Structures are given as structure tokens and as C-alpha cells.
Image 1 (tube, rainbow, N blue to C red):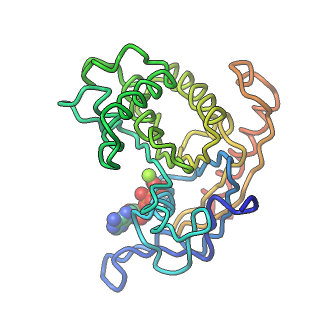
Image 2: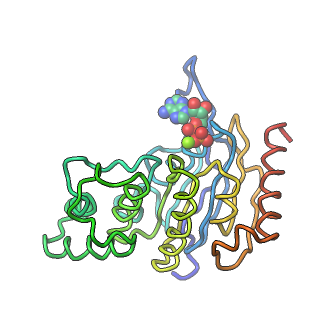
Length: 260
Ligand code: ADP
Ligand code: MG
């Protein structure tokens, strides 16, 4: 169906340790729709529930109340159908496997033949601009390169949805800016839908079509900011419209902090 939503979250609550002394209301009344092909960022203060929300979408957690659908099915069915890839702050590569074998792992689990796996991992290495690194071990790569391998692995089986939790949080500023450009290029080339958690205001402004600002305790959608900066280039970072967007996000975050 062409009008199908990539993600639809309706009245989702998440309470950890419900009924216990250490009960935490992490999310409350979350409503959010994401269109296919969108790039949506989740931003908010530490502990506001960004990772929890991403995990609900990815079926790594179940909502306490409400509903999460991914391409018209429950998040659980979407996970069974292997509709999404995930990338975290740490690349999470297996040290004892070469780079190509790391990228091939999800394909191995899906029963791909050796020849198909090898063709695909080379395509993915080309996509993330590491064509000659398949035979290296992860420890021989820089942090930014490892993170590119992690993205290659997540995209290897062409997921319709890419869930990313502060994937560039551990990188230095210049590597991070380079990775943002690379990610946008891959996003354009593959047409995948991206949900991206960050606590960086410029990062959210630079990458997204929409920025969802969450307020804490319990996490709620405070506001959603539309971003219209056209095709991003390095020049975008110096564009007054980019600063205006960052300011809008910053002001929303400030009002979140003071509880408005
Ligand atoms: P963020 O990613 O925005 O920093 P999280 O989604 O990780 O926030 O956490 C939201 C809240 O839920 C925090 O108060 C956190 O301590 C709590 N929380 C997260 N995961 C768990 C868990 N597995 N058990 C209990 N509490 C949790
Ligand atoms: Mg988090």
C-alpha cells in the first residue's frame, strides 16, 4: 500500500518495574506517525526515554499500553519479517571476525549462500566507502570506520527501517560531521526510513526531515519541528536557515527543561 505508514505509535506508555518500589514511568501517551522514507530524529534530555522509544519501535521492548505498528504490522511481526536494522553508539563488531564476515553475519543467519553473502558484503563496503577493508579485523579500523561497518551490516539485508541510537556519539566532531554526510547519502541511495536518537541539536537539525522533542519523567512528545533545508552539504552548516532551525530546537529543549 502506497499510503502505508512506516511507523505508527498510538497512545504508547512504557512503565519499567511496574508495581515495584523502583517503578519508572519512562514514556506516556506517545503518538507519532512516520512516513516511509522520512528521516526523523528523537531528541531530549538524558533519561527522557529516547532509547526506550526506539526500542519499542524495534520490538526490543513491549509497550505497557498502546500500540506500535511498523509498515502496517505489529512491531513484533515487523521484527520477524526482518524489516529493520539497528545501529548503536558502539559498533558492536565481533573482534574475531573480519570486517566482511561481520557484515555477512545477518545474511548468514538468514541462510544466504556464501557467494551471495560475499557479493553483498562487497557492495555494502563500497556503499560505506571502505571497499578495500573486507579482509581487515575491526581493531585495525578507526572508530569512524568501525561505525561505517556497523551501518553496512545493518543495511546489508535492505531493511525498510533503520533504527539508530546515538550512533555517532563516541566519534570526534570532524568524523561525526563526515559520517552525517555519508549517512544522508546512503539514506538517499537506499530510500530507507530512519529513526535517529541524538542529544545533539546541530546533528538533529542537519540530518532530519522532522525533529521530535521529548520531555522527561515520563517521556512525552513535547513538540515536533519540521526541518526544510533541502539537500544537505557542508555549506548547510553555515546556512542561516540551519542556525534558525537549531535555535528552534534549542528553544523547545529549554522549555522542556523548565517543564513548560
Ligand atoms: P534516554 O535514552 O533518553 O537517555 P532511556 O530511554 O534510556 O532514556 O531511559 C528512560 C528512563 O527509563 C530512565 O529513567 C531510565 O533510567 C529508565 N529505564 C530505561 N531502561 C530501563 C530498564 N530496563 N529498567 C528500568 N528502568 C529503565
Ligand atoms: Mg539513550
